[in-house]
Length: 238
Picture 1 (cartoon, one colour):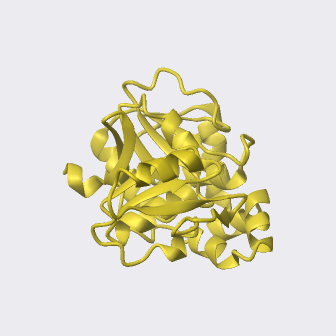
Picture 2 (tube, rainbow, N blue to C red):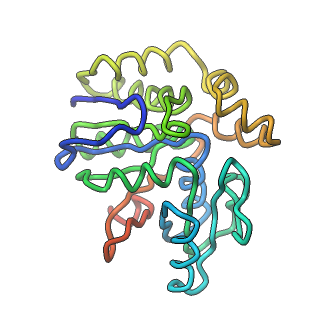
């Protein structure tokens, strides 16, 4: 299994035969995993606030979730805090965030698209082992810049893959693997620029939650439906 990782949301190339794991550890992909674990049926990642409101008119009962600058968008039902996403059985979520949802939409060319995070690292690793495809990890970054938490988040998943299978790591993937090997998630997330920003905004509990390794047994898998990316639990694909 060949494994590569982008430093930040660079243009994805030649992914048609690969699994692509998008990471926005703080917080969109963690929120997506949490929402699905809480019973949400579908999640539609959208890039703009305007697109979110427009899609809500077409989907009866859908909840709007997301943020700009870390803060809940006015008129949305939920922010981007995973702690808000509880008791969602059968619900549809339309999610728009500053970084993560845009990166997910950039990865639709992948053979298999997965939303990964620290909280579902083992579940994602197990799913990748079943797929047996080469893997590209695609960090969302922060405002199109490198983010420590996404890069290390990929490393925690890579370390789990390496325990079960012979892997061939690119130079970037090796650095990610080593970074995760010697640093606990709590330290990485608290140390990161975006982690510090969230803490200063009053979301210290979010940062603590997003660092809980292997908390959830859910794998968010994306597919195109009528031209739109929709994310559902991997249980629906078994």
